[in-house]
Image 1 (cartoon, rainbow, N blue to C red):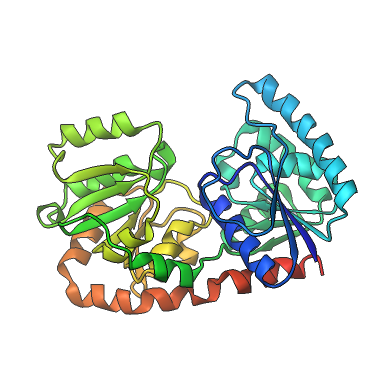
Image 2 (cartoon, rainbow, N blue to C red):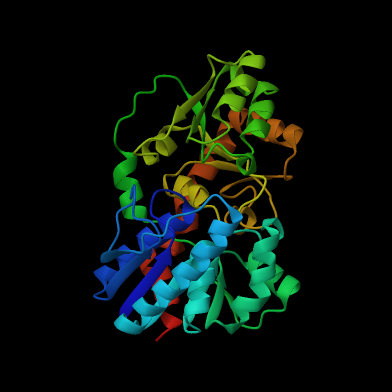
Length: 351
């Protein structure tokens, strides 16, 4: 089939990784794939098929964003008419809204907790998305919330995928880390809850044996570094920045911690599990509890509970038998999320 993905860019992030995996899997199966991006600058993920660049990047002003929606709508409508795609899949609202305005035949996906969206998004959702072919949530809890909020009748759930073969291959590459560590990965922004993790780590006994490595960049780097310095942990908590291969860090970590205040279906968690890395995760409203089976492949902690996270960190650091048990179950728990199997679920929507 002739398949199109529409997304803002491929320069990092969970939705972008999902498109990367799906495009490669569909191309491998012989489908013709086009990835329509709003801005082709700084592509960091591999992809299948061709890139079509609309060259209508993000605007920081509200007026500019509104103008962009309509510019994107007309550009997409022209592309859809010219190419006559068999299936059009959009990821994130910046691509979903103009795509839904351009055609009723699109399948839109939602990767953000509907309760946490902006007022503008909440106004556009009930107007645009019920008219589309399908609204796909990346977790069942998110689908249920979309139905509760908007009464959508055209919903479904498809989880994100993880390329286990690639992850395993990349996880074997060497890294320059000499001391044992706890790992977390993500943009340095409020929603990722790294401030909560640093507080929990500072209160833990584990800090005496394990460093904390944070991979990623973002607007809160200076603020987080100030918190690290305030806690006297500048030699223990390392803001390492972005790296080309996080998988090797997963594979060598004692365990991984997801401290997000809010998630959709966190790719980072399934990538860590694919590397046989035991995980601790805040049980935020959508995502983690559909990945982590508490006590089987990881530990779930009450959302945003610093004391609960401290206890979980210390429990896992001290209990070697529990850690081994979680490691043995980790990879097995995500084998159903291969790009090939998830791609088939998407293709069923348009076949």
